[in-house]
Amino acid sequence: MSNSTFTQTIQVNKNQTAAVYGSGVLPVFATPALIALMENTAMQLIELPESNSSSVGISINMKHLKASAIGEIIHCTAIVTEINGKKYSFHIKALDEAGNLIGECEHERVVVNVEKFMSKLKSQS
Image (cartoon, rainbow, N blue to C red; front, side, top):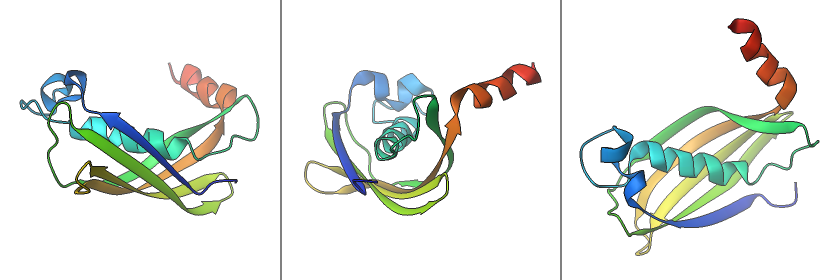
């Protein structure tokens, strides 16, 4: 693993609001959108061993601490806290432009073989 930290920045848009996601009725950054941002930030840190592999989230324990309006800038930083075989653990923080903590979480991802993973879904249907 070459990097143990990754940061990305987004600007909240109307498609990321609680009203659009259905997780609430207000025009503020939705908790599911924050979770997706956190997962995507962590995912960027995993160096996949082969082209037919990917990572999937298996757990997230998140606190959404502060509302963010449409147009606000959010910086999300993931830090690898542990690697155990194919399982990666992360601590992730999201801050607004003023440096206020808007959310943080502990997150785990596992590296999987895409074909094998998807074949399990086909056999269930």
